[in-house]
Amino acid sequence: MAKAKFDIKTEASRPIYAGVGVTDLAVELVRDYVADVQKRFVDVQARVSDFDFQPKALRDQAITVVNARVTDNVVSVTETYSDLAKRGETLVERIRRQQSTQAAVSSAKTTSAKAKTTRTQATKATKTTAKATKSTAKKTAKKASTTAKRTSTAPRSSAKATTTAAKKTASNAAAAATDAAVKVGD
Image 1 (cartoon, rainbow, N blue to C red):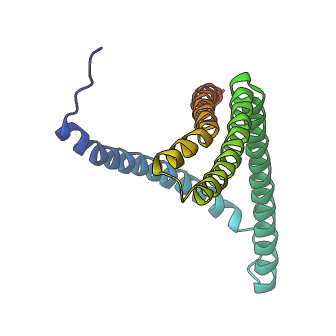
Image 2 (cartoon, rainbow, N blue to C red):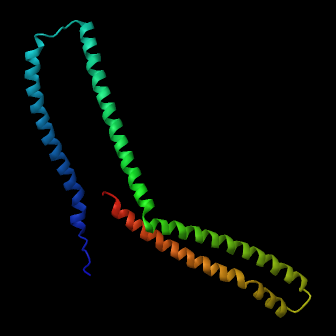
């Protein structure tokens, strides 16, 4: 597999080029806007002759225009927000329904249950070992060691099962994330 080469000069200059590109686009948009404003200005001059210049009339007209624009913008923003929220909700539901996500959730529940079992068994083994060690304190060190080894087998087995379940959960979660990434942008 071919490795992509990293050219520091090229990578360092990309943000600069992007800035220049944004500036070029902004200048183009401003020029178009200025031309449009000039055209509108000519139209406004033609209509000004019928305009009422009394302060009360100007205020009423300004309020009417501003209210209309604000109402239009609020409606537009609300619709856009609702559309985006619905789109996001649909995507999340699709991801939740996919088999790999459900497998990851199931694996996580199994791992959690196994971890609780391991903790319980380790606690019991610790208490048993402590009692056995206390009662055999007068006996030889070899016998106490043998007792401790016998009582710690269950927690080791449970811990191994928990580790295996955790690995499966991680694998399922990775598959779910990969499947979810494919759905984004559909």
